[in-house]
Length: 118
Image 1 (spheres, helix red, strand yellow):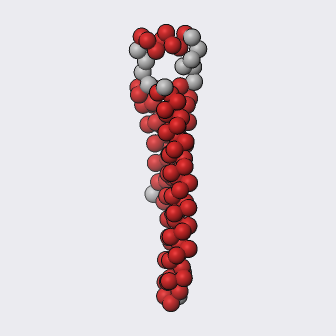
Image 2 (tube, one colour):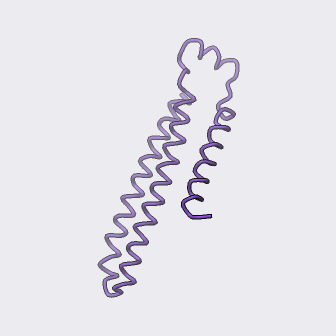
Image 3 (tube, helix red, strand yellow):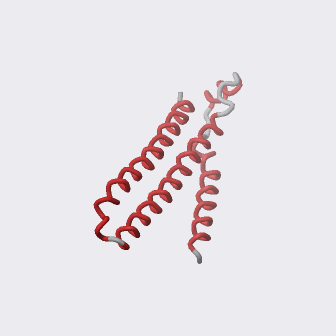
């Protein structure tokens, strides 16, 4: 199987698992029905789905970005070993910035999930 087809297959499988099991995670009891009749809990499932998809897509994008950045830096070092010191610093800075975006997505997802829980 080609690499791209493996990525697509694993992404679709993860999405299906998320959709199938998210309903079980947010099963409601009797008191939740009383809240729902008041109209306060109408979008909780969508908010939870958005939080899960948001962090999943952010982690996927961050992993791909970090992999490409590291591969490009190692390729540059392999072509010119003398420039390793000049490549390493900007590479680490770039990886830290990519990781900070993933952490930002995690914070937003946690805020959404806490909105569901409150």
